[in-house]
Length: 261
View 1 (cartoon, rainbow, N blue to C red):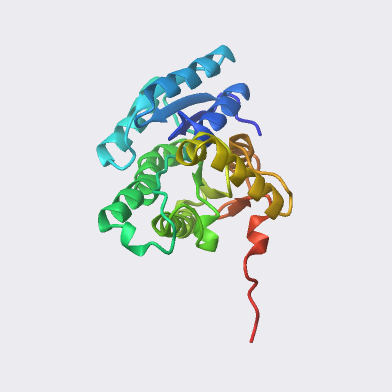
View 2: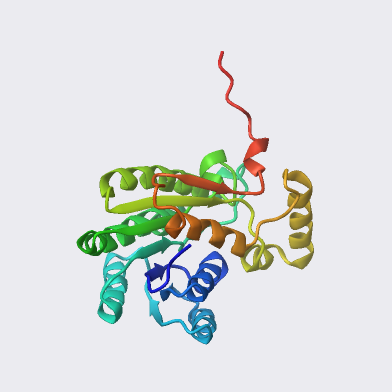
């Protein structure tokens, strides 16, 4: 992955996969815009880690569900460095609801989840596209989920949003070629703060153990695993576009296979 002197915007970079990606980019010599919505302290901590590696960093608060915020985020990046080479659409949200509890999801829940996971990705991609095209190229990678492939995950609304994100990735890859490549990484279970805060330590440990016992590779994925996959798609191979890369320790292999009848 050669991203030295690249300018890369990472949305949702204060924690988790986004934070891991920002650190990896900084270590590889990229200039990074670290976006956050609410996690200001966490985003500043990530920025300090990146600066300690010698990277130039811009920290920018913006809600990707808001069109004006998306345009401002890109404009501030352009004002600082005059270009944008990569965009990692990582910001996302969900609601933890079991699939059999249909009454627990409201229309507002769907709208909120889609606003960030789908519309936010579209707005950010649209905002960077003219700049990438004008400079002759660029790369976009979206953080999807195994939920969008298998219809599983934290809630039906979340899975549906990631399924929509997958098809939008294909659409954007077609219309933005040849100057801009668009791909997505689809993580499985990811260790870290989100599940720990939702479940508590005991239940979180049980979930991690259950994942490790059930997936073919017998390991739970980390934010660093997902960031590494995303950055491979962002800058690791210039011949890949319209790809949705599963990074799930083989979890998708437990899904029902397609059988011709």
